[in-house]
Length: 133
Image 1: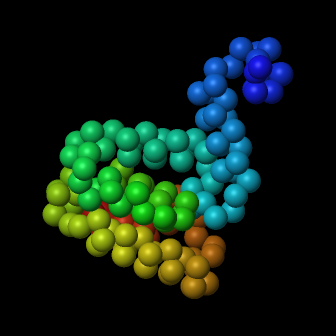
Image 2 (image 1 turned 90 degrees about the vertical axis):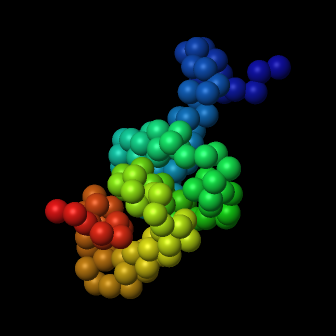
Image 3 (image 1 turned 30 degrees about the vertical axis):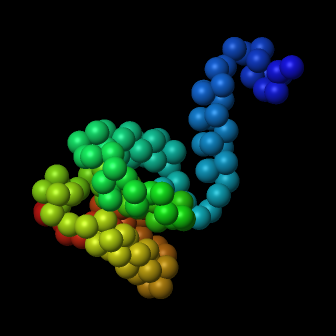
């Protein structure tokens, strides 16, 4: 018995592709995500996955994601890890970065400018602990 929808079976989509498609659809329906542009979210996830290969898999870097993080907090932390300088990754704790994520998200929700700032500007200039340019 096939549990996949008939149109998926007929088009020959693989279960992994189907799962990715369903995940993306469900994520786009949810308003509690930080990154709403699906291409941008996927690029961020890929960059984060590449960064994971540089660290010990049993490190605090990976264990922090075993906690129950909201999608917004998880995406923000992954974005930070994906694009931060490697020296920051080595020098600071996961708790430090998670605290910075929380402060940034709080500023976004509690300030007038936070509700108006474009997503990309927030990700690159408010969320990071520092901006080098």
